Structures are given as structure tokens and as C-alpha cells.
Length: 311
Image (tube, rainbow, N blue to C red; front, top):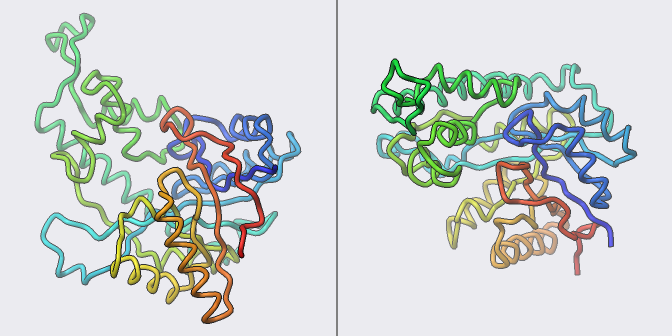
């Protein structure tokens, strides 16, 4: 049985493993094909390519873009709400030259995302700072009464200690809160402090799924909708989302993922079969662990067989 894993994250986004360690683990686990799909960055690709050569590992250069599905007119949304967040995986041909002009739309999205994300992260942390959120007491901090307070400067320093990439997101804030002793786990931080329905979350700006797909296609890549099960779409909303994705050229869907239930996978398969029957077009169906090292419980090396099966 051959293994594949087309959804892996390194320390260049919100994973904890270097690309080298990530590839070594995959090779040791007997995974035949892997893809590096860091969030909104291509910064780890050179290290990933070098590691794949070093360990004779088949690897695909990729990215995961954070975007939104404009299900409704943004002007019609209640204040403080945002459209559903969707992630789009991009996979690129072997030995792609990322300096080519065709990659400029993607580089522009990544550059703009980085600036927006810095503002978003710091707005969340500043909201906690203004609220006076503190962690455990520390006897070495006598000038502040031993209390470790949440601050924007503190978050910046902590995030840099984890990674020099500058590509930080809410998991880095969660780890900062854990380090301060505000929470005991990343899950607690997400559930009670910085999750989308929590008191310190701040709404964000983002691109649309259409824009993500267009940038990936401009670079000669393949655009796959990630982990459909995380979006909790059912019935007419799911059908509307499928239609939107097809209208704007999505090449496929992530079929197997830890957050895709059998029902979700069944919905994807049924839709893909319908598309094939009605149009002759075959959607790409992928499998990925969404491995983040120590930042998530997801593990590499689930036994998913390529090619993706059709009856």
C-alpha cells in the first residue's frame, strides 16, 4: 500500500517542523508523495525541494490560501460578522520558477495577506491588552507585581522566538497565551479567547475564493478546495458552494482529511460523480493530513491510495 499526504505545514507558517524534518518524517513513514502547503507563503519551498532531493522523496510545491466565500453581499452582513472562511490549496508543476511573471498575482496576494495578517493579529492582541488580560504570576517580574500581562510587544517577541518567517496567525497567539499562563492549551485559547465567537476576536479582511483560484491558475497551478468538513455547509448552502467553486474553475476538492466526516466525503464523491456524468469533467480528489507538528494532533501517513478511486 502506498501512502500520500498532500497537505503539510512547516515552521514557515504555523507548523513546528522545519521542511527538512517534515520530509524526513514522511520518508521514514513510507509516504510515497507529499506536498508542502504552508499558509499564505512560498518561503519554505526552497528548503522543501532541497530536503526532497536529499532524502529521495517525491514532493509537490504548494500553498494554502486563506480566503472567503462571498455567499451574500458583504454590505448585507450584520456589523462585526464576516463571510465563511475557505482555504484553497494550490499545487504547482515540478521545478516551477516562482520569479516568473505568471506568479506575480500570487505573490501580490501573499504580500497583501501578510500586511493584513499583521494588522489582524495585533488588533486581537491589543484587544486583550486593553482588557488587562494577564497570566500566571512570575517572581522575577517584581516591578509589575509578578504578573505577566498580554501585550502587543510581548506577542511580537514571542512569535519571533518561534519562527523568523513573520508569517504568524492565531495559533501563534494561542501559544503566546499558553506561554503566559493565560490558558493551559491551544484549544482553550481558541475556545475561550480568540476563536471567531470569542470576546477578543476581531473581524478580518480577505480575498475571495475566486481570486485565490485565479492567482493559482495564472501560475500554472491546480486549485483544490481544502477540508470541506470544516465549513459546516449543508443542503442548499452546500449546493450553492459547489456551484460557486465550479463557476470559478476549482479543479477539485480535498476528499480525505481528518475533519471530513464520512458524510462530507460522500457529498464530495456524489458531486464529483454528478459533474463527471453531466459534463465529462473529472474533478481531482486529494488526501491530506493537515499536519502541523506539535500545533495540532493531526498526524502524517494515513493510508490513502493514489490514484483517487472512481467506480
